[in-house]
Length: 332
Image 1 (cartoon, rainbow, N blue to C red):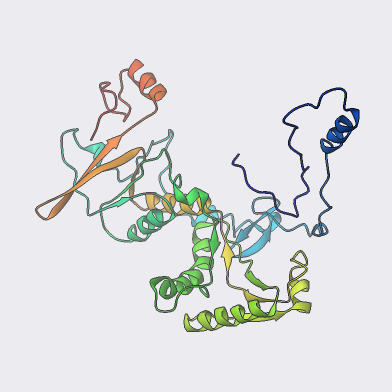
Image 2: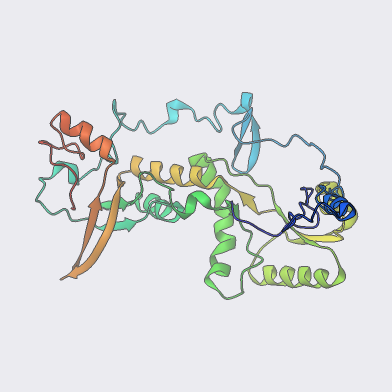
């Protein structure tokens, strides 16, 4: 754990540094004074009371968030849990396909044969997976490459998961152009993919008059960006909405359309649906080079597998990618 300066509100013990030397025994009064300095001193108690336990719902515990709103477990059938009779009846597999999809072009070609794709997407985080899903609507030969051993293993898995409303983006920027329209897509996206979108809204607090002016600026910025339903909430109403706030808050900018997702659940849902619709996903493929050759781009990748898996495959006469005979892991 990295070391940080403790905040004044921290209730940790404050340890005084040990003495650099012990005074000689013929000065008992000095020894007594030094011992007092070594006593543990407690910090003042926390100035805030513990927030009330409102037993807020948690996605996956006795229910789920669906299209932004909470659904109790007994009501999940037909909503969060789809009716199987309406499923597209995607083909099932008896064994794990290990990064292959039903349109795995490369798996049906000889090892030395070049495979030509219409589109190659590098990175299977939330952005790459969302692009792959959208392109799966079209008759394209699409390949999604991921260097890690599964989707969402990069920045996506550490993302805060906030679906911003768009009031903070600089007007005229690309963020401002796409944030609000993207925000409005999430309820329907969750109806289709069921990744647990929570429409919880957001509050930007002000604790003094100077910060109130900042709320006004954000409100105006949101208006320019097309964000709807923004308003400034006064103190009395604010603490009814959220009783666990900083007691110094005097107002807040409320954006009811801000939401939250579990980022890796979001990326997994996008990638799974893309693969169900024909996109080929290849994990453990690190892109090492891209060169333009005529009208095409050539993408070089390094395929890796865990050593234990490679060893186990070689023992049964198969290579790590499932082909025969065993050949170990090599650059492709």
